[in-house]
Image (cartoon, rainbow, N blue to C red):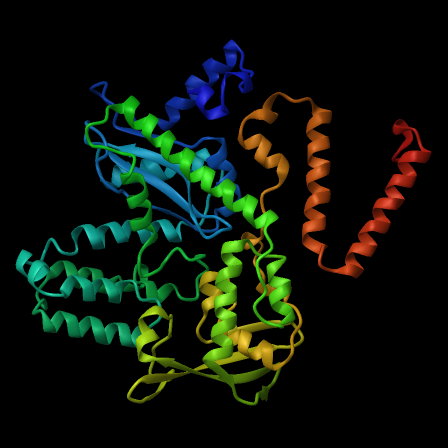
Length: 468
């Protein structure tokens, strides 16, 4: 197991005492049992920990299904990487789905990464399991199989583009439409709606975790390609490793493409060029779609000056045939017009000139971390050349993972000397500085001057007196 976590025999560099210590620590991540049976297990290797370090702002987990002959429940922990893809940052096997087991699992997760995190995403996914695994248990099979209740309920639960008032209105309509007023379980879920309904997380940064087709469904589908219910524990772990190899190969491919491919620029907007040098390819493609939508469907009214900010009203027109493929925010104020073949929506964009920030009533940036078409429409109108730094999240950056972290994640750096490690760190720091300011000629000029000053000092002084 040590070998697997480190990346091979040649990279572990462990002594006998290290194996003893590892065995001791491992017991902390294996659930206790009075009958000598495995009840619970949690694990995360070096690459998973690296991904956690970079993408732990949003973490979810979901008890998927029983993937082995022992009927233990497989629970993967998932984050969203800088390509907006799911990456596994840990996994667990549980004998039961109880409060006791989940409490143990969450403690192991936090201990495994030596820190506490905001588990908003995790809490949501736990409820997701309850909703999609059990929400239909208290209702008749006939209602599920012979009506569109399930489809309509799913659409309502996962729709983060509606106002809370509209959610309540639609929920009550469904309950009345299908005569579920006396369903005790649905009443309980309705009473805690702010803890699990997607709409209440619109202003929370979740990096695309919530969407109409859930991330959990995507993760489940991925692992089902590798797992089988007749697997013993050894077969299960082998299949899990195969799944991780494929997932990490895709992540490496995305990293390589983002670093080495130049995406085509589709407009003459300077902030599109700026974005192409900052974002990964996948994120830049999403950004380009918002640019095109801002050009073809949005128009901005003249702004109004209100204290410290300017307010713009954005009118967006969408054809009926496109409405299902677009994210639009429905509330009583935004939906302002309807004709035979199109709908019209109104949003509000606030510009804070002193802070160089933008805020839209749609809250796309707050939710997904990418500027929406409404804000881009205002930026076009004002001939903005670059995206404000506060509106460019580093988590979507092409070079978020440093070269030396890639080496350490495969276990290669565990045995190197102190000087070798510092050399790697020095290369990484300089590279990271260049990645951050590389588009700014003035900042690069200053940075280059600093490097020349350091070089002059190194060349003119012996190492022992370097910092004297």
